[in-house]
Length: 271
Length: 289
Image 1: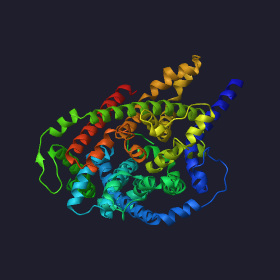
Image 2 (image 1 turned 90 degrees about the vertical axis):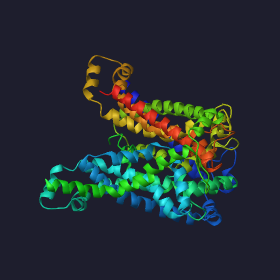
Image 3 (image 1 turned 45 degrees about the vertical axis):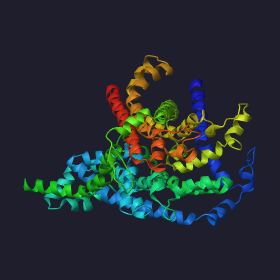
Image 4 (image 1 turned 45 degrees about the horizontal axis):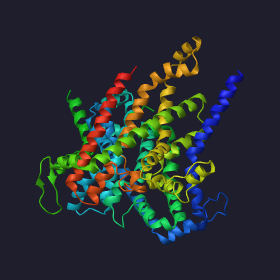
């Protein structure tokens, strides 16, 4: 008995250590963003300091941070909307018919390197004069969001008893109406999860905006990559930018944490 | 009967927009990349079919082999670390019965952070001159390291960053696997008086294998295509020390605009990813119970 209590205490200690290792670099980033700029680069690092907002002020004064945030919002919300509009009916049809190839093909986007798609897209969008436009960025980010919507929603649609759908049909309901009036309300929790995951992944996505945006349409993510080059002189502002960019995904993920692991696995892990 | 045909066509109609989108932005571009990889491509000019020349060049390109080696070393190192540590953390969490809210929130934080943020954060922590990592090393009496700035340490360092970010994800998958194991096998082991250690190796681990292989598949897809953190922190450097195949292909395409050659590199990399997934999927069938 005594042995068990000891083991349990050791166990808690190890969990605390793991938690500390996970937290440390994030905490370091947040702390650095509130340090007076002269102390950000102090060595040995200072753990105690008078917190200040000067890095945040500098960030908004020296960079078009608000504009890039707007770009990210437009592209993230746009691509999430497209992902839902295309993905919801597709997931419903795949679940009903068990014809899975449309869902399977989207997995190609998950498995092939992003650069593989970026090469032909670049050629295509150049032909169409779409490089640097919101359109190109929203559409390519929807390649990330649509598979998420389809794969997150599939098990939710699968859980609806067949008899519910069939009796609606007997009553003369058309298929789109069944989706809209009966199935969609039943999968609302799944829709919320897929929308949040889509938002997070589109917001976080780095590669496409690196090539397909211009100075005016850059996402926050692509712009902050440029801050690294320019901003080596101002690490405080860099950490302030990193902290702000990290907030939306951290806050949103908090609400779907129980669905996060299976949602990320696109059907490979049951949640 | 006529009703079921009507149903089928209505269902097809519902999936048509997604199918068109998938064909236009995923399937057609994929085919186009295959086509590009067989051509000498120039913007605005004529593209000439050069058959397998891009692939032949690739096989003679020392930088391709270097990239392949770096990709595989980073893959094996990171995957091994994440599976071992992920299982360890999952066992800890499983033994503590209830996963507290704080711990769960902490666990999901690293892998929902944008890669750019992870890169910026670790650049600051690992800075050779003023970073906190070297300060900690010094404090416990270890030599300082150049981390990402060192040609021989850059890949292990990237593996560490990725392990920090994705071990919690692997751990949560494995925890799910542990929670779905049949409890009666443990009871039997307990009655037989098996030690904890023996129970783990003889019972838990074999039963956990399908879950571990699934986690390995998911991580393989990301690790073999490794791009974000490296491009953000080192862009393939110092020198070419972290020039993975994906980084190399991207630079060939968008810095040197050798679109045909870059396409050949990307098709090759995709084949490697799909090959790894196929092998691991077979392995999962073999360990299924």
